[in-house]
Image (cartoon, rainbow, N blue to C red):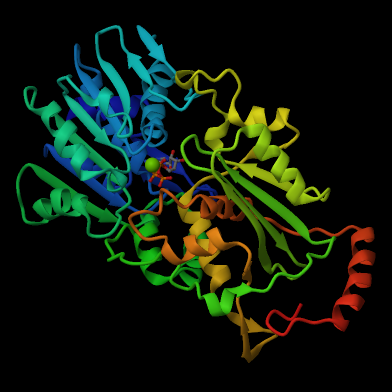
Length: 456
Ligand SMILES: Nc1ncnc2c1ncn2[C@@H]1O[C@H](COP(=O)(O)OP(=O)(O)OP(=O)(O)O)[C@@H](O)[C@H]1O
Ligand SMILES: [Mg+2]
């Protein structure tokens, strides 16, 4: 390893020993991180499972470049959210750990979903960029670039905007990402490396190599997840992903006739507001065994927030959900669009209290897939049932289940986004004495009019 690089890593505490929860010491960086730092290739792609340490390694890899005068680098992601991770590691290293005072900084805490800037006194510049904002991707010469979660980036953006930024200064590219099928990132950065091209370095590494990552969690996920998803998300491997995302969804199995939701079941709502498409709202109830029922939805175009709020109230009919979750982006005030209050605030002002959701795709996806999978009821192999049902009236949600594809999972699935928010919230039941009494009373009534499909 280059001595300067090692010295920088030592001084920020990245090079040395780290202890795990059992106070066992491990060498940092992890072996694959170290091999990436040791490579002098111009294009370095680290394909690793979630939580391996990709962002931290990617950010630290460019620190020696940022320590040089008058250099410029970009961290580019599908939105501003992904590069904010690498940016934070860079900021922490330079400003928090090494104690340098920036000459200029913008949005360093990522308090609004926009660009971040850090300029050091020696003229080194760090910018975050989003592929959604193509105008910002023009006309600068770069010394380095990080493609954050590159497998979610568009190849045309790389070709049309990014590649040309690297020409004059022979800029280098670091690619810390989980893989996403055999897509362009695989072709452009992984294959040349395995074929031995000297400008390229690439490795695939499992999250298991991060000694701080819980082995228990790894084994649990291995049991629960479909194999291809597990291999991709935990072991960082390329797997062919084609077709429908919710392959286990079957209209015959999961779509049922509506019934009245017992009052004591926990209800959740999720709101996915969007400036250019209808606001999507989904309602889900959970019975005492953890079975989930999507019982209502709303997806009407051209409504203002007060109108949507009114409709939500009418649909809920006076029974407030236990929690309403909203897209985390709704908390930001979008000054560019002339907002003075965030969308979340506007809902609150209109009487619809809602809390920020966790919008991570993978975790929500796993839980939905798990719930869709029929399992034995009461240890009876002849009686297999899923734990997620959708009422027939939720037409748009059913449509999304039947059409949501790998490749479009990040967009235009607003109701499924809402479902993901609810699943990421780990809805759990706890019972009060009143609820137990109410349940028993309702149980008696229900037994008299059982539904053959669901048992309710
Ligand atoms: N060499 C290291 N020494 C100590 N901690 C590390 C090291 N590398 C990563 N970590 C820690 O592991 C966690 C995950 O790191 P990081 O955010 O870089 O992972 P990631 O692979 O980018 O995750 P995600 O898939 O969520 O983007 C963080 O808490 C980070 O500080
Ligand atoms: Mg990351």
